[in-house]
Image (cartoon, rainbow, N blue to C red; front, side, top):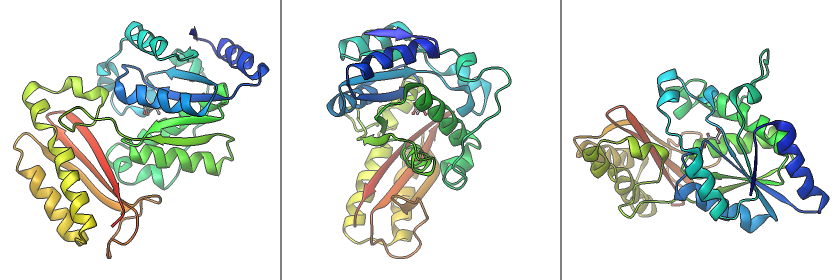
Length: 281
Ligand code: PAF
């Protein structure tokens, strides 16, 4: 496995793969890798000859500088994990490489970025699409893999790729969970021990919601069910609950009769956890 920190070196590494007629898959990450990321690496490997991973903690998608500073980082550990997993190349740009002085171009999906989670974190998805578009332009992968856990992010990226006619196929990887059901996330390490014990309430509520959806529950009753389960956990504060059409993310107000995404965000102290289920009634 080799690494690069400049655009020229990264492009040089990819050009070597291309010269050999090889296909390239990309897994964009912000580092501090866990099994969820590694499952995306495995997905990428199963679809292409070569895998390129980027590690870049993207300032443009953080609302507050404090969140950016608190984001966990461990480059040496990440590189060890990626090398052991057989990744071919890791791109580790500096902020000034991704956002050179004087830059002014942003990429934004105007509707999808500003609903649901985007209302709670204004500018977040614009930061994601801007950096992912830049990463795609640098690496020019055939396919790219993103986790289904960040469900709105996945839909936003698919929209961007379709709208800008980017020649890259987007794959969503299933959420990887701890044995108690908690979706893996770099934020989990920041939970206080009691909050960590309480956090599986998200997946329990979503499991119950998925069962009830398949059994024909109405949208208001589904909301009540999830709200009551979160309220029963004193350390958890419900921040967002969205029941939406799985692809467009339009809110569902009538009967549940097509693929439905149930998206949940719950705060434990100042840590916000998200999880989701896609269910077909
Ligand atoms: O999902 C993430 O880790 C980030 O949002 C991404 C896609 C790497 C863009 O910075």
